Image (cartoon, protein in one colour):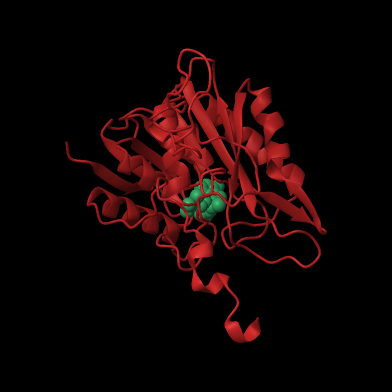
Length: 309
Ligand SMILES: C[S@@+](CC[C@H](N)C(=O)[O-])C[C@H]1O[C@@H](n2cnc3c(N)ncnc32)[C@H](O)[C@@H]1O
């Protein structure tokens, strides 16, 4: 079946079930025009953090929260009862104090009856070096479901176990390999370890990353891939209200899901559209969630040069 990708300003009265769409307009106005009935199987987004990035105007925290309250309400009623909502956030910072945005958002989702299934810690290796606090190296994904009848395909996202050679030492399976041959659960735990698989150690999109565009805050396709594979089935509809460069859409199309998204900035919307077209053509470059992070100890740069020793 041919895959159709559209970049639109208008919201048609009926959406063709084969279309993948990026609306280049304010998300609230798009939602307002969509029927108030369940359409999304999965919503994944990283909203503006209100920290004065190029694409946002810093507003009072109460106004920011109120804006989200209204937005989340219109998203929840358009999400299917078997669906999930994933909100990827970091910190808002004011006068040197950090406000983890998950603290701010959780009460809003809870008020709408959503159940928090995981608070996934996304750890990454690079970022600003702070002088007066520890350098921040993680953000979180809040994963909510609308009901107890939700999709969770663990087998689609298992990772290699730490000790694949471990054997059961008692019971009827004594002597047999004890792990699941399909791999282990990727977990949600924040652990400062050096192992690739202990945390969601998917590198962030900084200079040198294959996915890097001019957007200042892309999240990696690999982060979204894992969520899409675990929380949806083929042909399901994935919605990203703050599409940015279309990373969610790239992951959705890679795995044969449908994508709908909104992006206010016309340059980013165009960029997202081009990425989706390249994905359909098999030309988009991305770093798969299944690719292990490079072990820095293998680099010659991880050793001091002899003269300096
Ligand atoms: C944190 S970025 C998302 C980046 C995206 N996850 C990616 O990987 O490229 C937030 C995006 O929301 C867009 N945005 C801000 N306000 C918006 C609004 N009212 N409606 C739609 N998009 C908006 C910004 O232009 C920005 O690109």
